[in-house]
Length: 540
Image 1 (cartoon, helix red, strand yellow):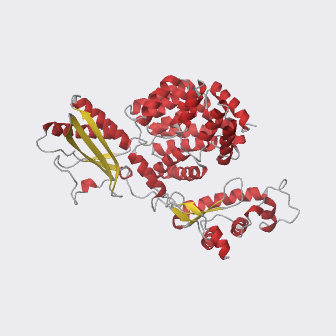
Image 2 (cartoon, helix red, strand yellow):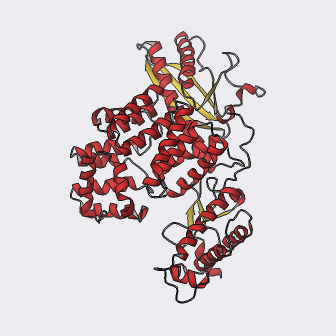
Image 3 (tube, helix red, strand yellow):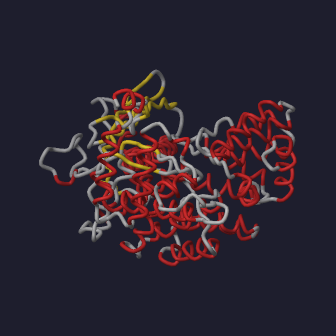
């Protein structure tokens, strides 16, 4: 037993990046007992026997023997004449068990120290420490928080300057006013101001400063110009979340410089891919919480949009489906659910009946609630692009740009959809401009720039762009690398990239048609990709 327990404690990556030991067999068995005894576990005697059997077989080192025949005859009561080709019992019960485990962790997992997960395509369970994204508890109600409570508040303090430097004083005052305007353009945050312009720090008893973040800075003379330093403090973590220094030429018009700098700072902090959403997204996934709330649900979806893995997809989908029941008047929940269902079906995580009409209906619902819902338009553009409605895509891009033309994420989305709908030159130009200003650029944006180089035969440039797409558990980067390397004649590397695609998506052959349609909506580009992939064996 000691050797078995020692072998089971393999190193895994903890939620915050530190190395931690995997759960011991004793801890896993305790978790199984909690699951089987919990009223939240919706499984009958057969499903419970299934779970107990596969866990014990895995802990005893016999995971390789977990086949349909052994499970049916040793756990589910079938006799030795059982034939898995005729009797689908094990496959059906495995599906029920996966669903029962998901529901258990969704409803009662807040206190579960160990998570047991059975990946599709295998009957071997995976044991992990529970993390916030997997173990939140869903309450009976949404709670009493108002919509305003769901929006993080950012306090802007006047920028400091030395007495006797009138140029610095005038610039600091103007920059403060422009920052208020620039940050107020972002509806995902609320801006707080000091009670008086001389106040440099909030007093301890000032309830006006019940904020999540504080933006402050300084302006001073530097050679022939001005040096501006800005920083964002995360109040709860008591850390500097972002800081940057800017050197400005004094010959530049003060008002124009203030406006440009304020727009840059606002984008770096409050844009969809800025510092504040990035922090909130990580907190929503890994931070503690004892109830469902709208803000965390939306930020968990943002985490999904970056990772696009099956595990996070399932968490996000259940979270958002709960959300449309608890907050049916919130457009972002409907838009995020439309986006989630689209990717879940395109990537083969689910196979919903009539999923495309469902995506359309949910995107329309978001826009019905708020015609300015940016993510509603993004979800609509995804649907239109997949269906080949290219004229509608470009009209939707126009609407996206109207919402907040100053935001890099707006230009990024519009440029992405314009490029993939066939307006390659203007679309990729918008993409490159937006990517150059983003603090946390999403990898998917490089896909369109990569495809533009690929269709023009610029394969080295295409490879350079896709190598900027860092997503080791998403198949797009590996798939496009396999495509480009094949065209470059680097066949062994192309086959290695293709093998990585199959590692990530073992059933890629089943989803290849729908996935390539999503990847390259234009038929001529899709034809070129398919031709390049033939040598890798992925499409055989």
